[in-house]
Image 1 (cartoon, rainbow, N blue to C red):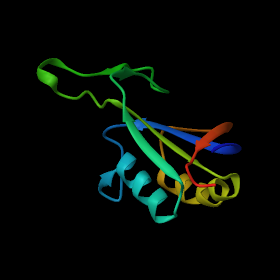
Image 2: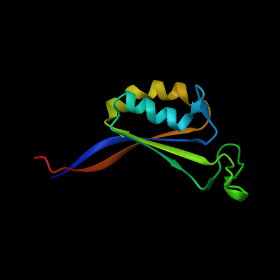
Image 3: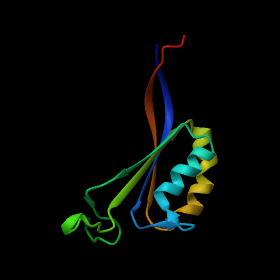
Image 4: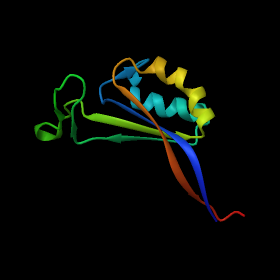
Length: 111
């Protein structure tokens, strides 16, 4: 069965070296989303990028990190996303939070 629904998606853009309570920020966000029973959260490491500082972050020689860009994507129903926003805003002191309404197609074998 295929279900089409309207959901919200949050994308948080930060750096690999960003921290929240001595933990990598991206890891802390995913853990908090899980604790709040959000439908899904995934952290992606970018290979190159820049943000507000206009400084390009990329992998250095010998595979060392240059504070690579991280994007965390979170999806769920609008009311659950709205309820999670105060927690997220407390966690992110630098970076960007983008919120979008998206159409989702959910595939399920259950009737």
